[in-house]
Amino acid sequence: AKRRPTYYFALGSNMSRKKVESRGLNGAKIEIQKMEPAVVPNYRLAFNLKGFPPIEPGMGSLEPVNSNAKALLAYEREECHGALLRLTPENYEKVMRSEGVGHGRSDQGYEEIIVDAYPYGRPKMPVKAVALRARDHVRLSYDPRPSARYMSILKEGAKELGLRPCYQDFLERHPVQVLKKWQRKQALFNILFMFSLSSILKWRGLIQMQTRLLFLFHESDPSRKLANILSDTMITLILMPGAMLGILLYSVMKLTGKMPESANRLFDFLDNE
Image 1 (cartoon, helix red, strand yellow):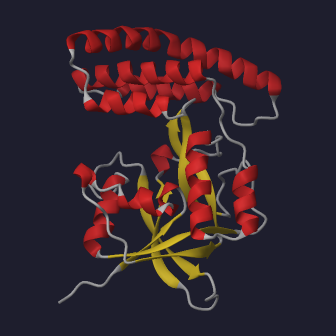
Image 2 (tube, rainbow, N blue to C red):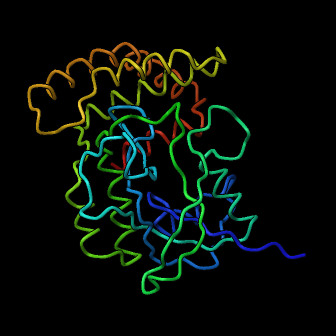
Image 3 (cartoon, helix red, strand yellow):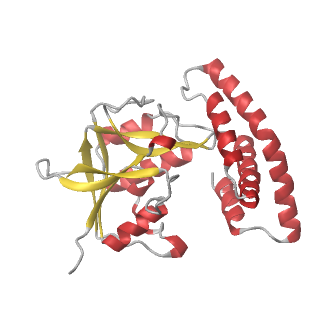
């Protein structure tokens, strides 16, 4: 028997069609049967999936409006707008694998939840759809500022989809993490070293400890000027040893011609900022 299509409600970078289509592992294209704007009541766009400050402090997640997680900026209505995608089961699995979901691993970042999504123009015809919420162990109790890079992808997807102007305005007004180029460089060289070391040791404990330390000093509210200066200073000091070793490692990789593809992508990321 032919398996029924699956509906997936995307609220973050997957609101962009080209982003979804290119997310298949090993270059495999993800085919979308249908994609349309929709709204999910009683949930909000959150950025409380723990990331890696200061470069990507928090990623998108669907959060119940009555949860304890504190929004940095709330939308005027208790609802979340996004893309409703109809996918074959095979393509749905590709999307989930690209999000790190479905491997049966206890450390995956998202859990699948079922929501009622209302396509635009059909307010009384909800569709049961799967959405992604940050799991307990990586769910922050507040929303840090998303990176300017990440938010630009959301705004591009919202415009492409034709989400309501008031929701696009909400995305435009949402505070973002803006870094100077030297801060991005420092963070990326630190990531290069920390992930290389973790790969050699086959242990992620050092990254987890550093991330906890970074969040301890990370300031999410842009209006607290003094707190932001102190936060930037402490984060710079925390990242400095790893960044210096990352620069050394990068130089050795370039000299020996042994630059991994993942490292090239990391620094392409910097160049494209």
